[in-house]
Amino acid sequence: MNEENRIDPWSSSQSTDYSRIIEQFGLQSMEGVSLNNPSRLHRRGIVFAHRELDLVLESQRKGEPFGVLTGLMPSGRMHLGHSMVIDQVRWFQEQGGDVTIAVADLESTATRGISLAEGRRIAAEEYVANYAALGLDPERTTVYFQSQRSIVQRLGFQLGKRTNLSEFEAIYGFDGSTNLAHVQAPLVQAGDILHPQLDEYGGLRPIVVPVGVDQDPHLRLTRGLAAKTNWFNVNDAKMGLQIGVSVQDENSAIMGVQDNGRIDKNVQKKVFDDIVETVSSLGFSDIMSNPKHGTVHIPSATKRDKGAIRMALLSLERKLGGMGLLAPSSTYHRFAIGMTGDKMSSSKPKTTLFLGDDAATAEKKIKRSFSGGQATVEEHRRLGGDPDKDVAYQYMMYFFEEDDKFLAEINEGYRSGRILAGEMKQMCIDRATEWLTELGEKRDATAHQIDTFFE
Ligand code: TRP
Image (tube, rainbow, N blue to C red; front, side, top):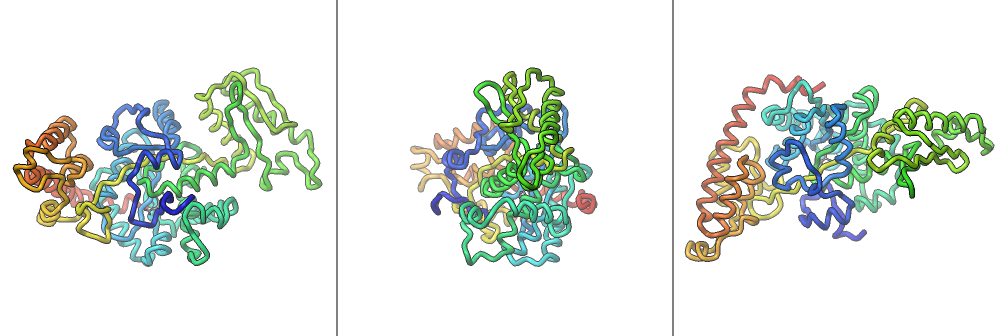
C-alpha cells in the first residue's frame, strides 16, 4: 500500500474521498442499511459506512444485548467534530446498547506528550462534562481510563502475540524510529475495543465502535487480531456453511494434538461432538462432521444463519477455555469541513467551534467562515451559491438544524441564489448561538452527574 492510500489515525490531514475509502478498505456502505429510527447523521448520509453493523442491528431487533464502545484522546478542548461520535453513541444507547468509553490517557501520553494527571483532568472537565450535557445516560455509560484497567492492557499484550512489526508498518507506516509507546498504543486500543465482551464486563455480545474514518486502521487491526484467536471459523461453502477448526499453540492439547504431534482421536472426537451439539441446538439437522479435515459442514444453513452460529461457537470456545472474541462492528462518519475551508483541527481554533465557545466567539468564527457564495450579490443572484462548500450551511446540516425539510429548502434557496451568503451565515449564527447556549445550560444542570460516569 503506498503512502497516499494510507489512513494515518494520528494525522490531522484526512482523505475525503469517501467512496474510494469504502472500496479500498472494504467497508460496507450505509446506503443499503435500513434503520428503524435513523438519526440526523444517518438521514443525511454523514454516517456513511460500517463493518458488520447487521450483527448489532439483529441483536437490537431481537431485544438481545449489545454494547457500544468508543474512546477519546484527552488532549485538548472538545469541539464539534468530537460531538459526532457522541451523537452516535447516544443513538445506540437509545436503541438499547450499553455504553463503554475509553479515555485514551496512555495513547495521549505516548503520542501527544500529555501527562496522565493532565489527561484525567481534561477527560472529566472537557469531555465527560459535555457527554452529560449532550444527553448520555450516566446510569448506562461507563467511562474508564486505559491506564487504570489492567485487563485492557493485559489483553493488548496478549493480542500482541498475533501481530508483528511488518503488519504495523503496513497498517500505520511505522518504521525503525517509531517509539515503542506509540507501537503499543494500537494494541491497547484493541484491548479497549475487545474487553467489554469479556465475562467480567458484560459477556459475549456484539460491540459496535462508532468512529471517524481515521480510526479504521485500528478496527482493521483489532478485527484481524480477534479472528486470529478464534478456534472455530464459519465460512461460506458451496452448499450452506462450513465450520473450520483452527488448531493453535493455545488449544492444541484441547483439540487432541499430543506433544509428539499425534492425534488423540477420542479427545478430538469430543471437540467435534461439542460443535455438532452446539449447531444442532440452534435447530439444524444433517450436520456433517469431518474431524479428519478439521471441518463441520451444515448444508442447510444460509448466510443469514452465520451470525447465530458464530456466536454459539464463540460461547463454546469460551467453555473450552478460549477467549471467544467476536470481531467488533463499526460505523464511520464523514468529517465536517473546518470553518476556514481546511481540515478541522483542535490545534487550530479558527477551524472549528469548541463546545465551550461563547456566542460572541461563535459569531465571529461563523462570520469569517469559508463561504460557498459568489463574489458579488449580483453574481450570486445569477449563478447561485454552493451549499456543499459553504461552511455555514454545512454546519447547520451536520450540527445545528434538526428539520430536514427546512434544510432542503435553504439548500435549494442557496443554490438558486435566492438566499445570500450573508443570510446563510446569519441563520447559522442564530442556530449555533441557540445550540451552544442550550448546551451550556445543560452542562450546568448535569455537572453533578460527572462522577457517575466514571466507574
Ligand atoms: N485513538 C482514538 C483517538 O485518537 C482514541 C481511542 C482509544 C479509541 N481507544 C479507542 C477510539 C477505542 C475508539 C475505540 O481519538
